[in-house]
Length: 226
Image (tube, rainbow, N blue to C red; front, side, top):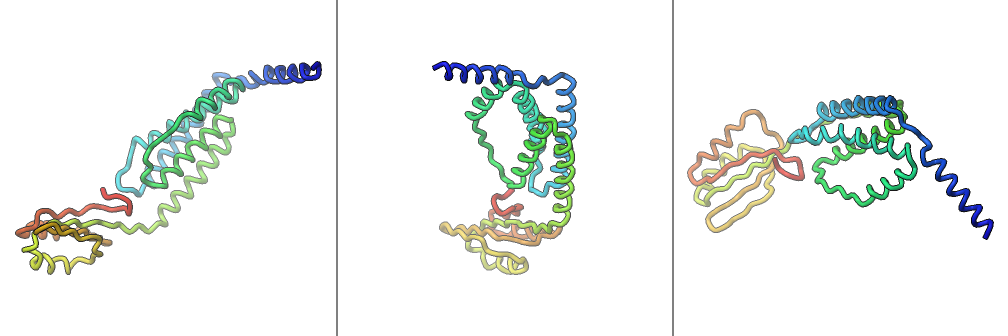
């Protein structure tokens, strides 16, 4: 019984000694957040210049900056107080983030932002800055080397009676038939076009044909159209 009490006293004493094992001064906090902000703005710039999607999202890019700062703040808080860190881990464990990530590349930037926040919050600035520069250079090189083939979808809705007039115009376009829907006298064609030049006058020409309800040309990334 006495041995058990001695063991409990040792544990309590150890926890109390660790409760405030690191004091984060205002100067250190400002330095850490400033370096985090510099690295976060670098991530912001790299994301912007290497973006190859359909629609650039400023809000998502700005979120990466805030994610760096918040992560850094969390790490500084955890490292300053062991009791508070246990409570924060418990609180964060019940949080669920549900956001649709359309481009898998965006996940990489999110992890990059979190990693920078972790390194800066822990005071390992060499990894935060040096690692960011290295990753940024790799992303720039990969974005320059990437050969991007733009794909478009050409959607035509028309009546059956103008099918013969429409076919000669479609034969001039290199396409792959994706789908064909026939409802009563209405037909809807979805064509995949690999190369679309600056001259898209054929869209207006087809739309002007008697019996054609609509002719729509949209950019397509393989998952969804914009």
